[in-house]
Length: 114
Length: 110
Image 1 (tube, rainbow over the protein chains, first blue to last red):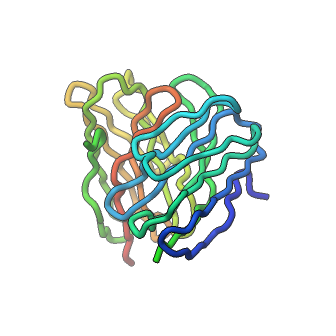
Image 2: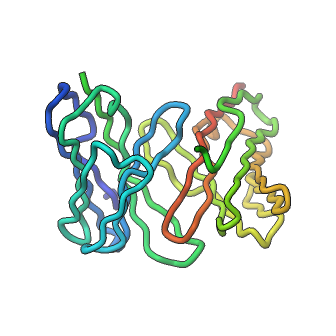
């Protein structure tokens, strides 16, 4: 069973539509993250949350919002999708262990905005 | 701006050869340097990591070399195998936050 799950795995939507990507984890980690991956740009941090009441913007948060519904759930929303939000989206979790903290990634959601 | 620069973008190595991927960073506050490996259709997974007070870390065929004064580190894959074909990301950490390089797509050919 996967420790970090993402739904949906693939999504096609149209410009202007609101969509939500969901992430669930069974690792018991307090920290959760949303990244997007684009060819040649690597993984860029969108939002992160260190616990249920904590939400922080990453380097590319414009056009996105998040909700931390519980320790195990962290959702990413695109309020009004645009084509340049077409990307591969990853959720990750971690537990604070000082500098040697490891992030555990979900399988990703491939999003296409037409 | 890219705080962690990675090269090359793609790399083709013959089976049995040595694969070398290089990274450079600018922020001296980074205190941990992991490498993540990503196979197609999967999320990245931690491969190997090094602390800045160590110059080399070896795990099996994978070695990280770290040069603190030059702010550079590299991944060496010895005796490269087709199963090593994947995308590799270097990263640098400030506690709780990873900054990734742009990735290297490695292909091992027979």
